[in-house]
Length: 466
Ligand code: PLP
Image 1 (tube, protein in one colour):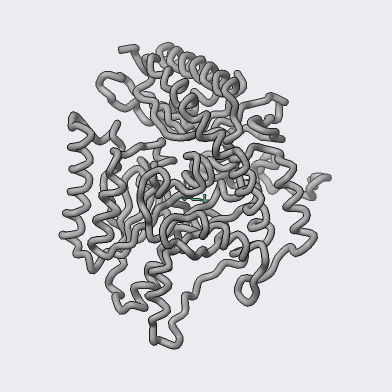
Image 2: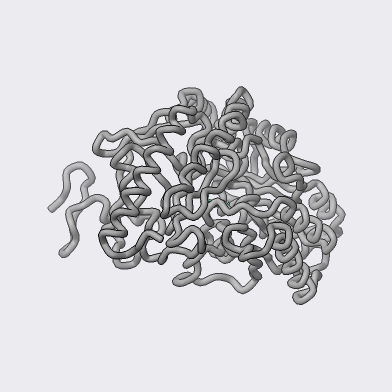
């Protein structure tokens, strides 16, 4: 049988279902082709609409990315205009105006001496680029043994082989292979890690752990430390106040490049274009970014790179030392044109709005902590994590197999809110245009969704209220 619209033909045993052919992100082996995921058909501002015509607040802003909101006509027009002017030019042999303008804009806004940018197609390719640049840098400076990568439990840095090896969330590596170049430190999450220590003592413990690892492996073997300022996909894990500064100081003392992965935190999520210096007081050697740079309207990412690294490379007396690294869609003119206009929108009141509305967002979500299933609500700026536990006083995790986040998301969708479920957590990172009234609705629906989930767990005999 040939289907009329798509020309598709079913092989024996296949369902007559378009979705069967689409491999979704992170599929479970036995469900491939039968993933039950909602179909989103349109979006406007803070909302998306699903296949049943239900309007939902976009709690995660797509995937931490739709910063200016859906259906922004200004960005849509820029994309069209740029496509009609110059759709594409190769970054291997040519340059283009939007890419050069955006590079200048970003270097004017990045901290310290981060004066250069290499554009990629998203976050994974940005992190991959940063790591390959570290490798090239150390090869050119005659330190080929200085290549180890230090990341942390609770991190997410991407889905390519090398970047996924840096990831450290529960279950990230249960069924997947990685590379043997990575050493992992503890997550700096106060909620999970402090275990009776004061926050200050926990911070000392984390810094000591890094110091000991450097002694053990040898500074001359460690190429880079990579860290999200806030571990986003790990569940919005916030670290002790001076932790990042002290980790940065250790990197500087030991000639270890500090890569700040701002794929989530840049472009307004924390109220600034970049958060590393403005929020956390550090000047990294590289910053990786993606997502919010185009508010998700076009796949674009990049790495800001310190002038110090390029100054060092320029000293090379190897005539053929080439950074053989480039993507067909690096410096894509449409992506860069969108990013330029997006940054203008952010700076024309949206960053200010995000900074202004963030305390309200955090305060209202925090009220959910009175629910017996909620262990902690934490966050910063317009990103927050709601973590469910079996017993809040003991902070003991719920059985991961209960998929509590998914249950909450299901209930919330019935009532008009899309949630990002993360095992036993829900992550909220709405478009920066969100209003106080929409925040009130979001929190009210979340409260109902968590309460309904608690009832389900009790009725199914899976949980008892402590
Ligand atoms: N780094 C961080 C901190 C991220 O959160 C993500 C994606 O969520 C990535 C890197 C990977 O980005 P992408 O999915 O665009 O490849």
